[in-house]
Structures are given as structure tokens and as C-alpha cells.
Amino acid sequence: KEGCLARRRHLIEQAGVDLLIITNPRHILYLSGLYVTPLALSGWGNSFLLIDSATGETRLIVHNFIEADAKAAHVD
Image (cartoon, rainbow, N blue to C red):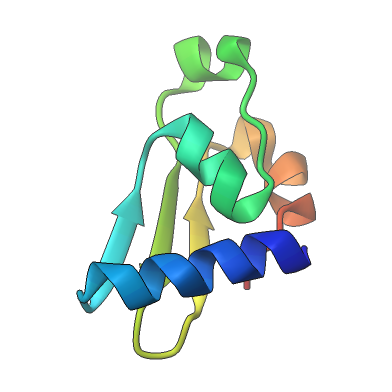
């Protein structure tokens, strides 16, 4: 969890934007700890990680198929 938080803080500092929308599964894993299997990607489409730069608050938008995995991710 601490690693994900530190990586997100670093990204926010470097990006200089108000909102970050992350869609690449590798980057979502790196920033939140959510692993999306290739099966889920092919069957259920993309997941989205939203990061509010002003507050550092994060949200995951995922298909219901991987809801349990998303609840275990390190996001708000």
C-alpha cells in the first residue's frame, strides 16, 4: 500500500494536471495494486483509475466481474 501511495504522490507532483485518468492495466497495477487478468481484459474491457491531483483521492472504475479484486486494491 505504501508503495502505491508513494508512486501516486510522485506522479501527481510530476504531471502538473488536475485529474489523471489511467487506463493501461500495467500502470493501474503499479499505482493501485489491482491486477486485471488477461481473461478479464478480453471479456470485460478496460478498467480506469482516476486520480484527483488536488486531494490525492483515487477511484477505480471496473466491471462488476472484478469488483472483489477492486475492493482489495489500494484506492479510496
